[in-house]
Amino acid sequence: MTSAEKLRIAVLGPGGVGGLLAALLAREGHAVTCLARPETAAHLDEHGVRVASDRFGELTAPVRGAQRLDEPVDVLLVTTKATQLDDALGRVPADVLGDAVVVPLLNGVEHLAELRERYPAARVVAGTIRVFASRPSPGEIRHEGQLCAVQLAPGAEPLADALAGTGIDVAVRPDEAGLLWDKLCFLAPMALLTTQAAAPLGTVREEHGEELTAVIGEVAAVARADGAEPDPDATRDFAWSLPDQMRSSMERDAEAGNPTELEAIGGAVLRAADRYGVDVPVTRRIVEELRARLG
Image (cartoon, rainbow, N blue to C red; front, side, top):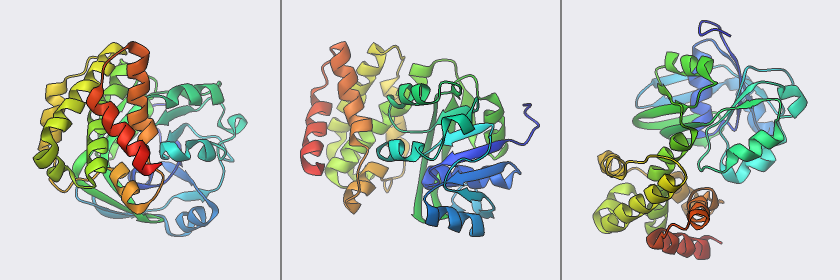
C-alpha cells in the first residue's frame, strides 16, 4: 500500500467513535465496511452514516453494512467498547482477516495481548483516539467540540495518512506504552470522577478538583512504573481546558443503566498499580465505590 491508495477498511463497532471514523474515511473514497448486529448492519447498508459534528460539519457517507467480515481488508479498526469486545470479535474470523493491520481504539491498556493472541497472522498496532462522540441511534453520530486526535504506533502509516486526509489530527509515535498510558492518564481520572459525581466535567473541577488532580498524579505514577513518561501537569492543564459540559462515556453509560468500562479503565489502573507496587489510595477508593454501586 502507498499513502495515495484507497484502503479497504472494516470498522468493528460503528458507535460514536467507529461511526465517525467510518463516515469521514468513506467520504474520502475509502471502501468502508461496518461490522455490526443484523439490524444495524442493514440500516447502515441502506442509509450510510450521518454525522453532525462541531468540527467537520454535517455529512452523510455511504458504507457497506455486514454482520461478519467476509472479504479481505487492509485495516480493521476495532472501536467497540471493552465490555463488548469478546462478543464483537466473533464477527471477525481470523482466516478471513489474515495479515491485515488491526488497530484497536479501545479504552485501557490490556486489550492488545488479547487481540495478538486471537489474530496471530495479523499485525496488531496500538492506537488511541481522543474525541467526544456518541451514537444517539444507529447510523446517527454526534461529535461534540473540536477535539478529534488519533495516535498510532508504527506499522499503520497508510491508515495514518488516510485519517490525516479526513482532517483528523494524527500522530505516529514509537512508544506503545506511552501512547496507551497518555490517554489513560487523562481518561481514567475524568471517567472515574464524572461517574462518581454523576456530573459533567465542569462540576467535577469545581467541587472535586483536588480529587481529580490526585487521581491524575496517581495514574501518572502507575504509567511511569510501566515504562511510560507521563506529564501529569500537562494532563491537568488539558483536563481544565475542556468545556464544562463535557461528560465521559462511562458516566453516560452509568446514568443509562448500561454496562460500563470501569474494569477496562479504573480496574486496569489498579491491576497495574498492584503489579508494580504503586500506592494509589484515591483512585482505589473511587474504583471500589463504583464497583459497589455499579455492580
